[in-house]
Length: 264
Image (cartoon, rainbow, N blue to C red):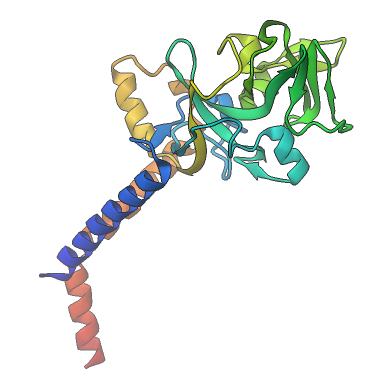
C-alpha cells in the first residue's frame, strides 16, 4: 500500500472515530446543527470565539432543566462564558418547529405569583419585579436588557436572547433605558423554554463549512439569510478547502523517495 493510501485510510478512520465519539458524547443524532442567521453574531466579519453564520454547532442533549445549563445570570456571577458572552447557548424548537440557537439568559420560575430568577442575589447589575426583569450592561453592545413577564406568569423555563438581536434589533424603552429583545417578548417563541422543547446545549463548533449546506438550501429557496454571512467567511472557507485538497493530493510517495535519496 502506497503512502498516499495509508494517509487516506488514516484520515477516514480518524473521521469515523471522531464522529462516533461526538455522537456518544452528544446523545443526539445528528449531533450537529448549522447557524443559519446573524442573530448570534458579534460583527460584520467572521470573529473567532463567537457564533457566525455557517458555523457547524455540536450539541449535547439536555434531559432536564435548568440541569447542567449555565445561564447568563449564573455565568456572570461565576465568570463563565461561551461564544463571546456569559452563559451557555442552547438550541430549542419554537412553536413553528424552527430550531433557534440563542443564549440562555436566565431560568425563570414562580413562587406565589412572584418571579424567581435562578442565580439572582440582589446583584447591583440586575433588578427583578413582578412586571419585568432588568439586566444592566449586557453583551458586547453593553445595552440594558428588559424582559417583560406579563404573558409568562406561572410558566417556568429559560428566557433566551440572540446576542445580535439585543445589540441591533432591540425595542427601546426610554423609561427604563433598556431594550426589549428576549425571544419570549419579540415573537420568536411564546413561552419560556422548558424541557419539552429544548434540544440541547452548544459545546463546540466548526467554522465556515456549514455554508456549503446553507448554499445548497438556498438553491431551493430554503435559506433566506444569505446576505447575513460575515464578509470574510467565504474567503476562509475556500482557503481551508484548498489546504485540505493539497494535503489529499500531495505526492507523498515522491516526497518520501526524494528524502530517502537525499539521506543516502
